Structures are given as structure tokens and as C-alpha cells.
Length: 487
Image 1 (cartoon, rainbow, N blue to C red):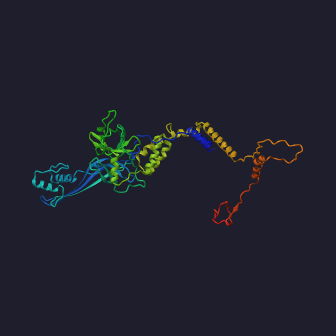
Image 2 (spheres, helix red, strand yellow):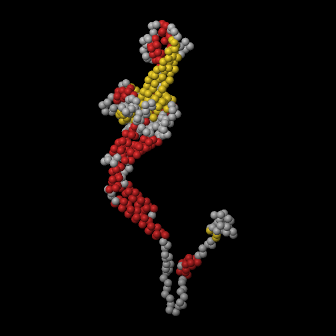
């Protein structure tokens, strides 16, 4: 019975799955939409306040302040609280800006020619030169300058309308070289209960040579005329891992990718996330410049995050966005539109979600909309009914067969007649008595057995004198209340 029912159920399920439309698959590989909402522009400035103690002639205190931009690039948000991974080069100024400020204030106040750079210079005038050298750091008891340097880093998110002021961040951990990864955290908590969009980090870098990737970043501060830029690149062979970076190379040799990406790094895309084609996750960051663009891998990213005791994670915005994105890339535009609207409710100004919502609304109900096609097919009855009829018939037959077998099993069998004696009873004499006489062997085989079947006594049934439960023949205590059996 169980086997028959299982077989019938399996056949029915197979028929139903054949008749039903196929569900939408996961979003296709190679997309950058999972990452681009979390891409930000990062700009760093060294703020210097300097006071020149002029002892030449009349004693004067000359005060100046200078904002010295020293780094800009692209960062990636990896935590809803606004934690960003970028490069050390636009988080930590390795140049001595105090020297720059000394050169500049001396040139302005004493009207002498001193280059505005980070080198210590000498003047032909001995007295001015002595005062200039005393102005340079390190500070001494006879210093002629008092200098205070602070660093201000600002992140500009990918939103519309653009954020004019961005939000301030500070570097809590950075590697040893300019192209080492760095961790930046907001100075003040990010506004909004659900935080910011984040980018998913990959588990590892693809080993295959020629693996396609995409690089997304900003060539300037986000605004109406500056959208995020996406470039295609390919990984070179597996050499150059770790701090030295992994090079890029076009397998078809049509584009000199190191030169192309090095130029983009110089224009503001240094630190931009390198996105794998497999599932759209971040596999590294763009580094280098000039004629050599390379990539540091995700292992370096997760390593610096671990040192900073920051756990990358995704938030509610990402969950809603990825669900809508799946529907969008499988062309279910009717279902995708409400999802993007929900994302914009959670994070107003999301540029990517707004653009995809606009496209979804434009294509909703159109010839490309798979959701409309499915609804139309269901309403028009284009799906044949015979699979459902066959499935119903199979289930009906299975249920009927099971009921019949169950009925046969529960119906008591009729008592069979006793078997005839093995030997034939000899004919009686005419003058014999009417009482039937049976030989000893026959009576031993049949009659005593018949008497046992008819006269067998059932064992006496006992009940508990405390609770009334029925007792078995071997019970010494009641199984319900535990009362001892009275004997």
C-alpha cells in the first residue's frame, strides 16, 4: 500500500512540475549593481595652522592656515554603519606638511622666492636662512614657528541629489605603503536607522588567467555630471599576489590594460573595487598609477579589517535591493518595481535603485516583462489541462486501490470446514446401531482438536480497585495509578 501511494504521488508531482512555469533563476554573473550603490568618493586634506614669530626688526606674530589636499580616490562601504575600505594614500599623508607650511609662510611674509613644496631650502641671506631653518620641524626651544597639523577626510556617497558636504571619516588602521589598504570609520554616526548600502566581499580571488572583472569608481566628486565609472579588465596570471599586487592583461591583447587602469587610478579611481564576474562580489582594490594599474586582493582587505576589529556585513537595504535586483535581471519588471521602491524608502537617494526603478516602470507590462507573460498565459488558459487531469486520475486510482487493500486486510475470514478423515469410513451393516462409531485413530486426529477449539477458556479479566483501569495477567501494580493488585 505504502509503495503504491508513494509511486502515485511521485508521478503526480512530476506531472505538475512539468506543467508549471519555471521559476526565475539567480541574478546573472558579471553585474556591478550589487557594488556600485556602496561606492564612495574619498577626499583627504591636511589642515595646517602655523604662527611665525618674526624677530627680524619689529617683533611680530604672523598667523596663517593652509588646507593642503594630499589624496583622493574611491572607497567601498563594507558595513551599514559606514565603514569604508580604501587605500592608505588618501587616508595618511606621508609628506611633512609642516615643511610645506614653513616654506609658504616665509615666502609670503618676507617676500622671498621659496618653492611651495615639501623640501627644506636655504636662503642666501644668513639671517633669514637662520630663521627659516629654525622654523622647520622638528620643534625646538629656539623655534621660530608654532605648527599644528590635522587631517580631515571626507566621504561623498553615491546619492542623488548629491551630498554637498559628505560625511567625515577617520583612519583607524592602515598598511605600511601608500597602496596598502586602509579602514575608515565615520566620525559621527551615519544618519538613518538602517545605515548605508554595502558591497559583498568575495571569499577569494579567481585563479584562472584571463578572468573577467569590472572596476567601479569615481573620477570626481559625485554630482549631476559625475556618475560612477565602470571599466572592464582581466586578471593576469596568478603571480604578484599580496602587497605587490596582481597585474591585469587583456587575453586578446587588444587593450593595454595596465596603462588604461593606471591612468584611471591617477584620475581618482585608485582604491576602486574590482568586481568578480562570477557573482558580482568584490575581489580586490585597484592600485598603482601611471602606466601600471594592478590589484591587491580580497585577502589584504579582510586582513586589515580583522586588524581593525571590524566585521564586514550586509544590512536591510542590501537584502531588499538584492531581491529586487534578482527580479530585474530576470526581466520580472512588474515584481521588481515595488522592491526598488522599498529600497528608496530605506535609503532615499540611492542612485542605482532609482535608475533601475525607472527602467522597471517603463518596461512593466510590456513585451519584455516575463511576469506579464506568465499572468497572460495563466489567464488565457494556454497551459494545457490534461496534465492536471492525468495527475488527478492517478491520485484517484491510488486512493481507491489503497482503500480496497485496506478493506481486504480488515475483513475477517470465514471459518473453514474441518478436513475429512484421511481414511474412508467403512460402510455400516444394516443391523448396526445408528450411533456412529469412529476408529481410535480418526477420533484422535479430529474430535479432540474440535473440542479444544470450542471449549478453550479466556483468561479472567482484572481491573484496578483504585482507578478502574484494566490490568494484564502479569501486572502486580496498576500501570495508571500505581496501586498494588489485590490477590
